[in-house]
Amino acid sequence: MKKWLAALALGLPMVAVAGDNSTGGFYVGGGAADLKMRFDEGGSLDWTTGEILGGYKHSPFVGGEARLGYGSDNGLDLLYTSFYYRTESSNDTAKTYLLFGYTLGQVKFDGDVGEDDSVNLNGFSYGAGVGFPVTQQLNFNLEARMVLDGDAKFDGDSEGIELSGVSLNVDYRF
Image 1 (spheres, rainbow, N blue to C red):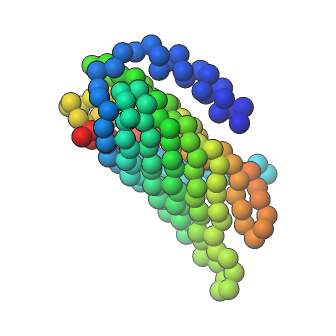
Image 2 (tube, rainbow, N blue to C red):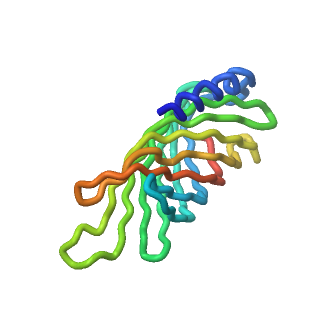
Image 3 (cartoon, rainbow, N blue to C red):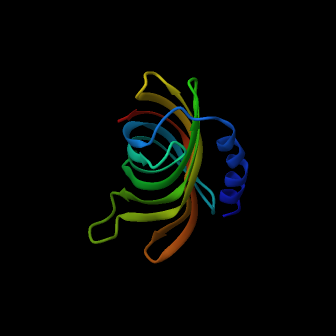
């Protein structure tokens, strides 16, 4: 939670500085993320995931966004959904944005018959990104995110995890 508050405190001045030449409205997009899952008790897993996203900018500065991501590696499937409050500012050259939200996910693996073969994930999510307009409606974005800062639950046990990384995506504004 302290990391989330620090990101918010550091990011608000960045959002307040730039003017905005864009309007509100819907947008959709997709991209790829390079993610690393770290466990509190040690160890890590790596995934390259595909993501689809959609959102609505209520005003030029504030909006909401949802993302669905999926990746598979060595018999482990990662599926997650993130919901974000998104603050954004832009000019003709670039835009900056912050994401604050929550992620729900699941890791599935091949287990023995009759055993639970999934781990449920949930926790806070936050990040920052920079985007560059390709056309009036099309944007190329680079971002760093803590996709999930929370818990993994398996067979009644809970362990703290972090799922973080960088992503590249494009979005189309209507």
